[in-house]
Image 1 (cartoon, rainbow, N blue to C red):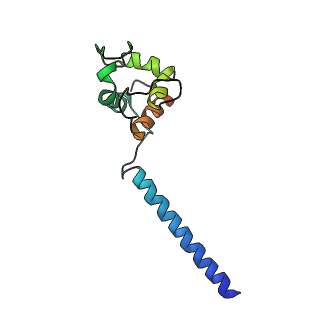
Image 2 (cartoon, one colour; image 1 turned 135 degrees about the horizontal axis):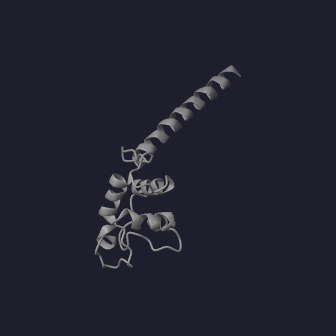
Image 3 (cartoon, rainbow, N blue to C red; image 1 turned 90 degrees about the vertical axis):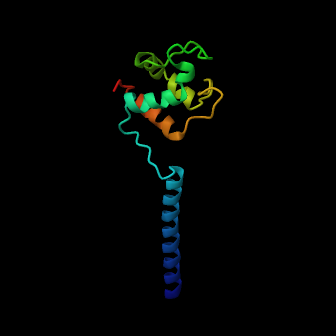
Length: 126
């Protein structure tokens, strides 16, 4: 009986260690070794950078390339779409909304998480 309990404890310890190390390895591979800080997302740096790299080609000042008349190049214009829920809906490819950026791959998870966090934090002009 004592041998059975010892074997069971050893097996449980090995499984626990494996599960912990495996989950940490998976977490790091999902983040590619980088973390995505969404606690202090700023419009002037984070959001403008994401938009300039992915959206302004069609939705920038003076753009007419398939923009649907939506100009996201100013804070006030973007704020309207953020407050209405459209910004998060289009970048997350929510049903019933056009998937953006149009004709290109979905934004990376960190960019989507930063946009979502910024909106959830009040879409501040910071």
